[in-house]
Length: 167
Picture 1: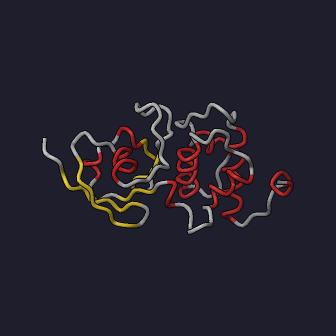
Picture 2 (picture 1 turned 90 degrees about the horizontal axis):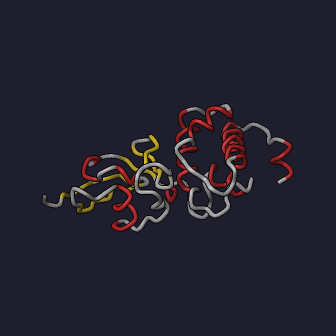
């Protein structure tokens, strides 16, 4: 099958690329556009390390043929920062030591960002459900859940908890 021209709005900027029918969104982001935040993990949609936002929803980019999403908006971890300033969820992960090896971190942050965009005052259960498709082999998930809840508090302008104030 012939290659196709695909237009995407990636991190707010319209990008055009040529893709074969078998090219995944993950491959297009990493290999064509040079955005390395989304990680190649299992390549089967089970680990979540390649999670990005597609039209505002978290998706595993390793399973999506890029030719099927022409005209869509894609947000990657690179799009969350503003210049040298990390996005609020990114900063919460740093402040609360929610990363170790870092391989799952971009996917976790994108899943958390989608949750907070949709539900500004999530419960612990909401966070757990939002990140359930993201596998972390290092942190034990507790620091990640705490970071997402802290980012939610910060977005709402709520005072920091005692644990955050000590960090």
